[in-house]
Image (tube, rainbow, N blue to C red):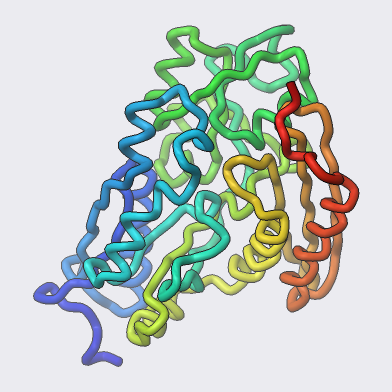
Amino acid sequence: MTKDLPTPAAPLKIGTRGSPLALAQAHETRDRLASAFELPQEAFEIVVIKTTGDDAALIARDKPLKELGGKGLFTKEIEEQLLQGGIDIAVHSMKDMPVAQPEGLILDCYLPREDVRDAFISPGFERVKDLPEGAVVGTSSLRRRAQLLVARPDLQVVEFRGNVQTRLKKLNDGVASCSFLAMAGLRRLGMLDEVPATAIEPEDMLPAVAQGAIGIERRTDDTRMAEMLDAIHDGPTGERLAAERAFLARLDGSCETPIAGLAELDGGSLRLRGEILRPDGSERLEDAVTGAVEDGTEMGREMAVRLLERAGPGFFDWRA
């Protein structure tokens, strides 16, 4: 495949959103490919693509993501460029990816997974339990909102979006007492030393499905990219995400449904934990299963079915 490798004259184009975290993930992808094939950085081009979701989020910072159109708003233009050949691959945060890809595209390459935990961010408090009664909490995640209200129904939760710097400014301005980010994002941005963050263990706040994982999307018929990406694909991350995303897919999970899931490996075994919550935090249903790694996808589907049977119709509906 040497003759097909990218060169400075014909660089491999990596598509991404333009946020600092998205760029950090694109750079990690570039660096891993460059190292795997002993290529200079000039053999790659980072292509920043503005999405409909980026514009909508800037215009309506205080509206929930579900009202803006959901996760697909942040991938549509990138995937269109990929299908049209404007870019060769697209780099995504997997926790933000829909469970199904457009016809002609495939996600089958994952980089080694980072820290899966959520981060509690507050200039004045170290943990959720330290918050005073009635404290205002800022988050745009329906999952985190519901999980918080299960544990602390006294809290007031307000919509809170933006990058790390925006959220920190809001906290310092007193808009809320705390917020939440993903530990993986803070690590990839090298910001753990400057952000007042406390990691929350999965036992206390089960993370979003695929949190901490980077996925690389390509055209289904692009055999050159399939071979190149295979060199940097992390098998254990792929095995974990197969179970988690099967769980999410069977639940028909979206930005409008509070769902959490985490798969962990122990030798040839896989342990999958999952939970679904009423959006108002009035009820949480949990399940866990352990089995062979190769059965992870089926385990995810079966666990979702069990939870749906327990939940009954209307579980994800907002209560008045």
